Length: 415
Image (cartoon, rainbow, N blue to C red; front, side, top):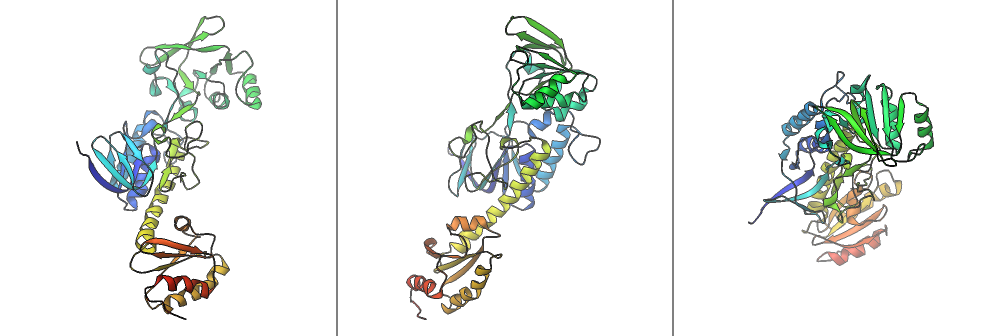
């Protein structure tokens, strides 16, 4: 079956808070944008029964309700949303492709917002109590539901110990299942000392989860002592996992840089190491993964994509125009030496009487354009012909510039 080919300004892969926010910004900018989500729109946030730390909801809200609002706003601004999995991507070059079962989508830019999923244990009963039925992965999100209750924490790293301490502000008892020998954890020394001294905390050493029990909701966590091979039944209202996350980046291996844990490193503009490819939300290498931070990432990515697409248009239609030889002056508006050259550059354009196209690129505003031109630090010049860069120069005297231009125009004009 021959696939249909469609063209977009931006393709967003992932429909969680980051992807939907990026879609809102892209749609508001009137970009032709499409978002792909293979599962439930809203991502992991939809499984959070109560969100109380997202601004604008003083009484709190559910993750599902909040994500419905995100979706409605994205659709209002014209974002196309496809509930279908992405089968393959090619992120190289200016024409990036994203393939689904029936269609190949061509895009100038891509925002990766595929998020991640908590690492699971794979033990019996686990799947029956995930998310809103008793097994949680975010103390900040769900601690308020633990007031006066007993909770179990799985893990012993920095995140596990610090989140367990946070939970003691709400729960009556916090029980930690630790794989290691008594007194040994993987967390920093300060956190360990504080946890061991906390009267609300109880430790079960040399233990792993054997299985979970309960009716409609989780009621018991059954641990197995690895030294004695004995089971320990703990009555608990909730269990928290802090054993790591698995970013959904398998599809992008070999195409963009990933950390050793599979996350995507970006700069503050959400740019990856590949031109025109951005990342946002939980999939990104970051210190905090919350709806609020995902929204910030998505807003930045959406804004940067708008600018990237606009600069791509300028690069193709103006800087790489084919009608006549081009002179691109790469300067900085905050650099006095660059500003002083502007009158001379304009005089050179007038001298060639319409046979040379002058373009100005301010690196202070358009870092990406100067990078695409391969220009050195301003001030510098890029010479083009027939839509191609012919040469570059950091020589800023009139004679040097005109020598190059005389070789490019059909009928050289002498000074």
